[in-house]
Every structure is written in C-alpha cells, then in structure tokens.
Amino acid sequence: MAQAMTQDEMKKAAAEAALEYVESGMIVGIGTGSTANHFIDLLAGIKGKIDGTVASSIASEERLKSHGIPVMDLNNAGQLSIYVDGADESDKHLNLIKGGGGALTREKIVAGASDKFICIADESKLVDVMGKFPLPVEVIPMARSFIAREIVKMGGNPVLREGFTTDNGNIIIDIHGLEIMQPVKMEADFNQLPGVVTIGLFAQRPADVLILGTPNGAKVV
Ligand code: 5RP
Image 1 (spheres, protein in one colour):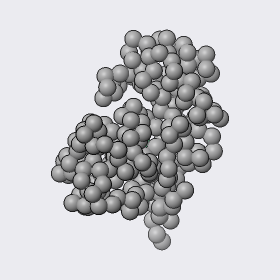
Image 2 (cartoon, rainbow, N blue to C red):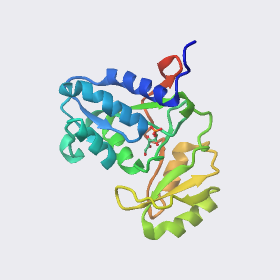
Image 3 (cartoon, rainbow, N blue to C red):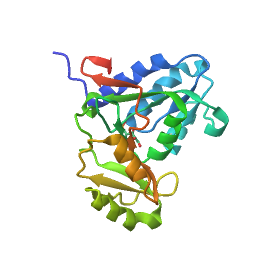
C-alpha cells in the first residue's frame, strides 16, 4: 500500500510546482520558513537560469548563499517579478496570516515590491475563517504594554513571543482568540497603532496564486 504523504512532503510538492513560475533572467523574491526552504533547495538546481534573489530574512539569505545562489539588496534590485513564500493560514480569497517565523515585516516589504506573490503551503493552511493561528504583530519594544492593551480592547489575547527578537531588533506579540471576518480592515486598524511595525495579515496585498500541496500532489487555488 502507498504510504501517506507527510505534511513536509506536501510542502515540498507545493514548492516544486512554484518552480514553474521562475523564468530566465528573473530576480526572485524569497520567503522564510520550512516551505520556503524547500523552494530555496529546489531553486539551487536551476540557479543558472535566474539573475539573483532578494531574501526576506537573514535565515533565508544564509540558506540561499549556502547554495551559491546570488542574493541582492532590495534597493538595488528594482521591482521583482515574483515573490515565493509560505503562510500560516490562507482563506479562499488568498488573504494570509504570516509571521509564524517572525519575518513578517521583511516578507511584506518584498511581497509589496513584487508583481506576483506565489504562496506555497500544505493543504492544512487553507481555512474558512482565519484566526485560529495566533496573528503575529511586530512591535517596537517600548510600545509592548501599550500595544498589548490595545489588542485586548480590539478583542484579542496578546501573548509575547518569549526570547525572540526579529531581524529588525523588535519583539513579536502573537494575538490569540481572533476570528478574522474583515481582514483588510483589521490590517489597517492594527497598522495605524503607534509602535506597531507590521501586523502579519496580508490582505491589502494578498497572494496572487496559492499552491497547495495535497496527498495527490500540488494544486493551484
Ligand atoms: C515566516 C512565515 C512563514 O511563511 C510561515 O510561518 C509558514 O511557515 P512554514 O512554511 O514553516 O509552515 O510567515 O515568517
């Protein structure tokens, strides 16, 4: 009998399917996390085809360099053709929760600077209503208590991610207990709080393509 596919194998299947979006001469935006890591490892096999990459985290930059894949500063790369990254949750409109790995701010910058955002994930990430996965928010350290109080007023339960500092030197508060019915509005509401660097909702700029790894291979949503 065939063995069931693991979650990690489904992530890899999605990453493999995303390779088809990579065209000659592109500078490719690269996300962060275990699914993005699969994509990086696979990209190594066709690294001669691309002009370079822009990484959304120090971890991804190091992994790319370990494969000999050139990494550029976004300021020198101009507009990117594609950005490939994972997600913690997606709804059917391709609004996302990201930031489980804490790289949400740089991820949102690179996604924003890309023509097409290709999200790769295993099928468990697709949900009806987002919020079961705690929504990460990157916060300037001095604003920690203030932002926690504001989160409570907005109906969430703030939990400091202990012992974690982002690549930008900030903290992450994970917001539990949300049911995200209006992701675009929630993203705007949180982002306007002073001290918030980025909320991990990608709804004003959702993904353009969602590739889900399933037990039967990758499927495009
Ligand atoms: C990192 C992210 C990741 O894309 C997200 O956490 C998904 O991770 P994984 O691919 O390991 O499931 O947003 O900040």
